[in-house]
Length: 432
Ligand code: HEM
Image 1 (tube, protein in one colour):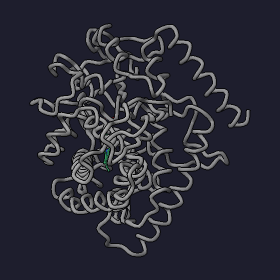
Image 2 (spheres, helix red, strand yellow; image 1 turned 90 degrees about the vertical axis):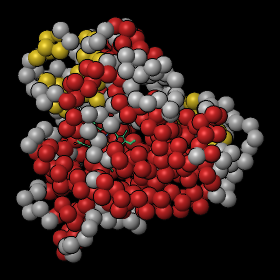
Image 3 (tube, protein in one colour; image 1 turned 90 degrees about the horizontal axis):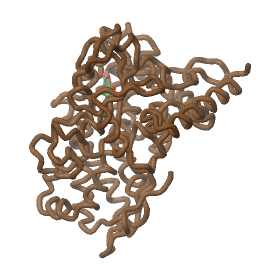
Image 4 (cartoon, rainbow, N blue to C red; image 1 turned 135 degrees about the horizontal axis):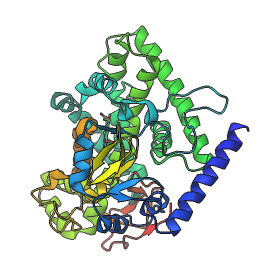
């Protein structure tokens, strides 16, 4: 069977199974099939009510427990889901048969030690406190530049015109291509991050393959250039200096920075702005004390995290919460639900930047795959929020929020705002 027809059939069957199971009330199917406008938090609560570890008809186990999520993430007997396990199609194969490197399936995000340790170590220096200090000025400058661009407009799209631009510029800077075309990088990043959800239709598969093909060609050129002109202080220059690194590892590691650092940070900015727009007392405090942005960003990470869940599988048969799990059984760790676990956070559904234990959240995961970019994301989020409300203290929603069509990544795809209105458009959501 030609691969396009085979992929279309597999995608159709996969979606039909998820839909049928969702109608039968299966919580995993409800989550996997959830329309992006639907509020996932009631589903998380229904899982919490069913127990600490809940078996679903789809063969997945789910947990909303903070204690269990943290325990599994830190357990060396568990690792990330193997490549392609939740997607019915092999998205790493290009239509003409040439194999492309898929960062979601091949980077150290989904690798185990010792490979994970070796590859993570190569890029870690950019994310240490010293590495972050070196990026502070870039982040502040990028935020101010993009605010300048929207300053004389009364209405703009907070996501497309601002939030999406900041992380792209920061990542391009890390790769040593500060003049990179923002729109092209954003298109690649969005297509690649959709792969986290598993490819859902042929249109998405084609967009992913096109993005991989283009990004890979761009990186091949960049790598060749860096080999000819060694000694730069960017990530790619450092990676090409390691002769023992395969081309696939080099490309997957570089691509991972865009996949992991782009949409996540966009949505941290978007979700924290939404929180401020929805809480007048938070706005008031932020205007009086711009340093409060750090607390607002941290509570946003807990209350409405950009990455809603991750998956782990045991390397061997094991017992968890009194249940025997066969080797390779996927356990969906619902980070966003763990962040609202009432046994850890008092009044967990309330947005309260003042809570003392806010840093207990699992928005950046835990264990060896703990987000390498956590410090950078916090810095970008706080700089964006500070700059935005300093410049536009009366910022209000100006139209409906369009949610992005993803379940792993939660945030707005479009958030119209106005800088001069006295009254706010009600914060309502529409389908993307
Ligand atoms: C608010 C923004 C961000 C959020 C919520 C976030 C969240 C996460 C989460 C949950 C993981 C672990 C996934 C798992 O355990 O399966 C992760 C891993 C990772 N993140 Fe982030 N991230 C953010 C921003 C960034 C940024 C800005 C960068 C870098 C530019 C970055 C780089 C990475 C990398 C390299 C990994 C893989 C770590 C490993 O496997 O050892 N992230 N991130």
